[in-house]
Length: 295
View 1 (cartoon, rainbow, N blue to C red):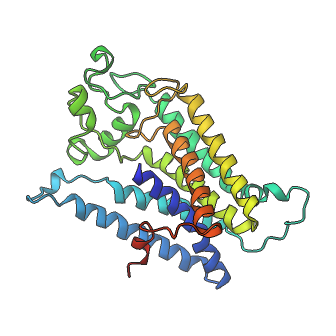
View 2: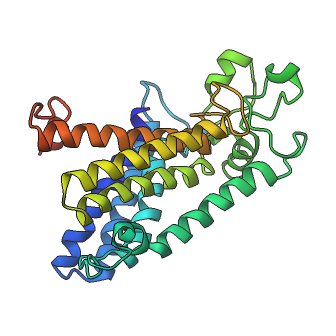
């Protein structure tokens, strides 16, 4: 849960970062260099962490993906996209459609993210995985009477195994402990990066709201509307159940319902923090702001 919250907050902070750089007239090639550099550093740090554990690590068994690697890829994709469309001037604040300008200003970004989501859904439910068929998104092993014993993660697991090989994937997934599955599966794999991009983009949308709308009511109402709508869509997708529905809430797969639910909760939590910290000043944000003050 904390991991997904961080991805959401990363997107929110991104809006302010690019706004500052544009106001300082930083050339786009320098912006991209910073994006690329930070992404590479994060990815390499993730690989270093994967070599930890107190024992020697064989390179042929090194886990390629991980939490920081997922951060790196998500940041690279969303930051590069926003670099081309970031704006500072609010020239249509008096237009008749001004209440929706946080969306309409960035309509190309929405198209790109819908395309990314379409790719994710097409691969998840349309890829014919050998021995598993199409659309399986379960844990494999003993699940569903062992019909899909070697299908852990469905298309997501299959793509990672084809690209990285079994030895470079996380070897101890929760499905192994619960369902006695034998196939390795990485919860921070490649396919889930696409929905990770979605939650980061929705966090970026929260940052746009803060930058474009200056009134307290304008911000809070939008945060709450976004939050409840996203949670409602997530509930519909999983049929308001814990493990069932058309798209169950699945953290290991970063399923669409999981991402929308966590994004909705992120908007609601942001509204609460904005009111209690910035407006009503009944809480200073401690202890959560301390990590951001470390230099």
